[in-house]
Image (cartoon, rainbow, N blue to C red; front, top):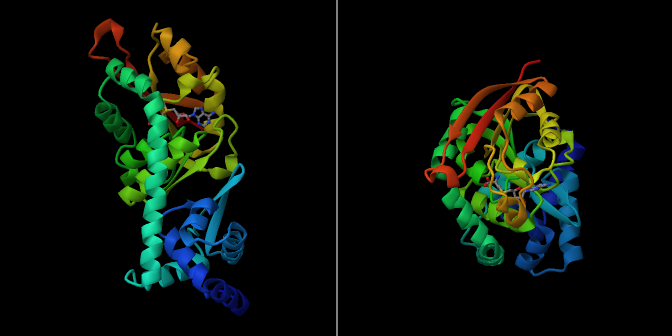
Length: 316
Ligand SMILES: C[S@@+](CC[C@H](N)C(=O)[O-])C[C@H]1O[C@@H](n2cnc3c(N)ncnc32)[C@H](O)[C@@H]1O
C-alpha cells in the first residue's frame, strides 16, 4: 500500500513517452547514460534528466561507477511493480519500440567488438595459462558443488571479469553482484548476462581492495582466480569477510604454490600460488574455518599449475 501522493508521483514519472521507452530498454539489462543517449538519439542532459525523474520516483536504480553511472530497473517496491506492469504491456511490434531494440542490439554488439579487441591484446597470456592448468569445467563444477545445492539470497563475485562465475552459478542465487576494476571485462560480463537472460545478477565497476560493506550482507562471496594479483591476499580476504552475513561462506579458487616466476614478470601475478597453511592462517585471523579443500593437478606434470578450491565458513 502506498500513499496517494506517492502513487501520483510514480504515475507522473512513468507517464511520458521517452521515460516509458527507457523503462522498456532497462528491462533488458543495465545501461550507462552514454548507451541510452546513443539508443534514444537524444542529448545526454535530456536523457539524464529523464533518468533522474525515474530514479527519484523509485522506478529505476542508479549505480555510480566513477565518472559513469549505470541504470537498471528498481529491484523492489511500488516503482518496481508499476514498471513491470507497464513493460509487460508494451507491444514489441510498435515501430518506435522496434527501432529502440535494434539500436540497443547495435550498441551491445559494438561494445562486444571493442572488448574483443582488448582480449585480442591479452589473448597470448590467456591461452598460455589455459595450457598450464586443468580444464575449467572441472573447477566450475567444484565451485557449484561447494554451494551444496543451496539457492542463496545474495552472492557477490569479486573480480568477476567476464562474469563467468555469475553465469555458472546462476541457478544458485536469487540475486548476485559482480565487481571488477576493468570496464572492458565488465562490458563482456553485461553482454553475457543479457544474452543468457540472467536478470538477477548485476555487475559494477569497483576496487575490490576497498569495498563498501553496504553492498552486502552476502551469503556467499566468490573469488575466482583473483587473489594472486594481490600482494597481501589476507588483506583482500578481510575485505571480503566484511561483506558476509553471519554464517556466510567465501569460496576461493586460485593456484597452489608454484615456481613459474614468469607469471610474475610477464603476467602481472604478484603471488606464486597460495598454500593451505597460508589459507588456514588468513581464515583463522578472520574467525573462519577452511572446511573444504579440493585440488586439481595439471595434466602437464611439473610444468603445469595445480588449481585449488578452498571454502571458508564463518564460525561465529
Ligand atoms: C584472471 S581474471 C578472473 C576473472 C573471473 N573471476 C574469472 O575467473 O573468470 C582477474 C580479474 O580480477 C580483476 N581485478 C584485479 N584486481 C582488481 C581490483 N583491485 N579490483 C577489482 N577487480 C580486480 C581483473 O580486472 C580481472 O578481471
